[in-house]
Length: 379
Ligand code: SF4
Image (cartoon, rainbow, N blue to C red; front, side, top):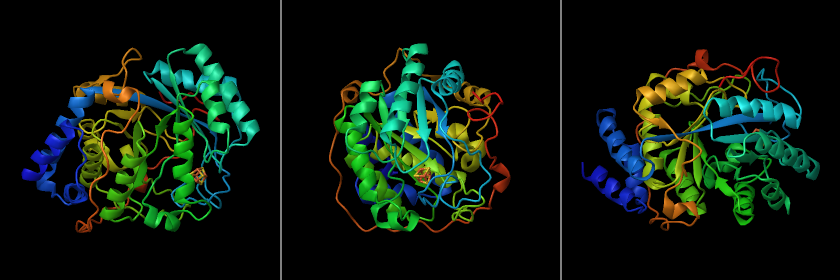
């Protein structure tokens, strides 16, 4: 297939595909799926070998958010019966993080619900980072606290945060349909603040919210332009009690095509398979390891993932290896930052014919263990 040969060549050269090429990946058929995975897999192996980086989420503060992000179980007015608790103490968060590190995670992601942190919250998180680094010197710490105000990125960096996560989530054109309490521009600004403060930027998307193929390509091209070091790809978990509860739009094949497209557009960036992996890829999860070089271990913020041990077995069975703390995730040319190339030419895209999968509400389990509970964490 000429398209795939072209994309592999471009990926190996770190050259950006055109928008038409990215859209064409999303429009491939199920018969072509293994060819698409094999092609994107070549690009993945060129830059990341067979390594899989494990990341571990610690939800520092769960639920009760004043923002209205439609996809989020923690949003204003959410009826989802999730765990709700206020800030974990530094030692509690450090204890939760230790479970992930013991399971093989090299990055701990400290997440808090809310529009953004107060200065007092930044103090709390700084103490938490310190507590984690005291215990695990080599672990990478990523903070995800929402929109940052002036000076907060610098303070987090000074406290030892290696990275900051803030996702663009969806295209600029559809952002207002998903969230009304803040803007796409606010999100871009926070990612840029984190980069300016010297933190490694992590910014990604959520697929499956009813967006078009053109929207998906838009957000991935926007991310590429923003040049984060890691791009988490979430697949919407349609929580009962949220406005997007009925949006069951993804098949495992569609999810794999999306991951392949992200790999072709961001060949040398840490592409992380994030929330919704088990729910939407199901038994096809191992194929995704040929596309992404990073996953979350264990549970998500408000939902349960498969057992951490099953994650490790899946990686080993698929012939991949967990990346150790002695290995630098990013290829040498990126490890110091810097974008490889500019965005391609914009062009109108044709969307693939809609697929209507069955709702798999049976696979969505609210998290009832780990941080904020008395039960052991999943790692
Ligand atoms: S995504 Fe973050 S800001 Fe939006 S509702 Fe959820 S917790 Fe709040």
